[in-house]
Image (cartoon, rainbow, N blue to C red; front, side):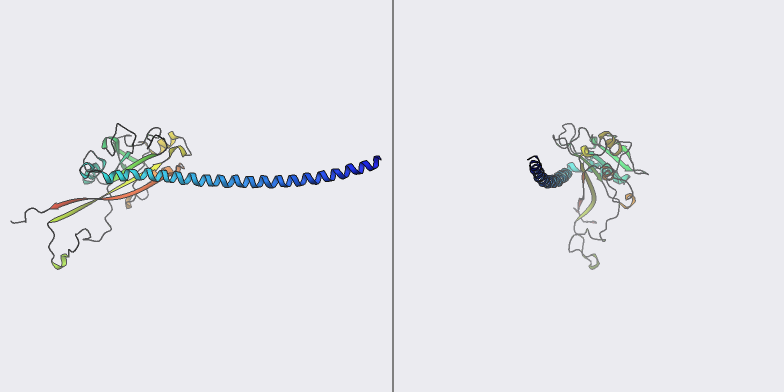
Length: 272
């Protein structure tokens, strides 16, 4: 009897072992599927987050450009406005750029005013020279956010391009004017000045370094960075966007050129 009972117990042990193996295999499959699902969900979340960050930066960098378009031309070209100041500075000492922080939540500084701006000029190395304004034009990464969400900071630069226009001679003349055929010039003539505006919106909280380090390396009087290096003499200079990229900060930069046009109207013909 004892021998028969031993055989029965041994058989049951084999069945229990086989069942346990099957259960473990099923459990392993379930775990693998679960891990795969979690990874897919994480990737999808990262894609969604990156898309949202990009969209947020783009919208923030686009807003100052829209505000400039909507501004009254008289206000825009006033010497107290950075665009008017940039035009004036270009007459005597071209090559500089005015930088200011877009602060829509601020009640102390109006948009694009020179009293809240810094005048920068490219230096001999990567750092720019702050000629005027000190730190007034640099965004404070701890407080100068574009909204109450305290996420995005937007830096704006205004410059007057020094490179020659790529247009052919006479391209600014009115239509149907052909000087080679003796066509008379109209009584109203236009003079055009290019204005370049660069906006850089970014999320400082995503930096791989501390806010203090980011501020010191990219937005300070000792390590200021120009935003406009499109002219041929400045292509090797490090920009604010380059500095942000070095600190792994997600950002969006937009470049917009405007034509400031003066209309000269002939009231009395020469010699009359």
